View (cartoon, rainbow, N blue to C red):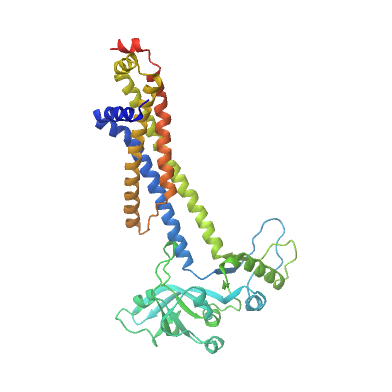
Length: 404
């Protein structure tokens, strides 16, 4: 059998009905383009969120109070965090690179005639390195200021823009938080938006003792933030911290913890898993159109076999074998699928790029998604083209020649 001639015959048959061939390929084109665009946007979104979450801190581990009840047995611990807990972790865990207490209060901030609603965080100096926050101008508060409950603060760029609308230099100025005066001693560099649209520049940081006693009137801390020495040590660090806190809180074996320890890597992994599930679900839904395209190929191939019944009979009468007829129609189905797949890949890439630019996310077209979509579309084309091709190959030559 001369495959070159068979391919030329199949190509000629497709050229005879270009518009019909295009309509046949349309389902394949839409299916491949949809799958590639969906997977590319999903992968791009995952990378974007991972990068944004990584920007929240360096090898971050967060400790929050609160029991997780997993059964009828409850913890007999304190259900809140103390500075002694932080000191115990700092001195006894070998995985801690930096550690800070945290207390937080919502704050209505006033400067002159301007006011702004923001969040005020109380922490120590190490909090900035843990959260990847950088002083753009000014300085961080000192240990003496923490001990003295001094009313000093560091503000983010959003707070600067909302309060100092005349372009004043915030350093040395006094702002009022809940009618308490705070002197601005530092301004943070621009950090941008975090995951879920949270503005990381909309922040005020003050000594934790000041926020704790002057604003919240509490003697405990609301959380502990720390960074581990190596990201690969996150699990070991969490195990070490849990062991230390269970001893500090005198939690009996078998009782639930009265605290929660969460690592940055765990949060990223959880979010990535959810996004992957959504991405593949959307890709699978988009892939349904590939099967619709395959059905379209089958329909057109049936029409083609019917229209060319006499041609098939003549070819078989002059010595053409059923296998030759089978291959001719299979090649036609394959060509339609391949062309549709190539066009679909190009359109899918363009759609993903366009959607990414509109949404502000870099679309990531991975090789596996292109290979998968292309392989599936070719496989579907051959699968749905097989039955019409087999029907053509099994025609009786005499009946085919006499067909009107």
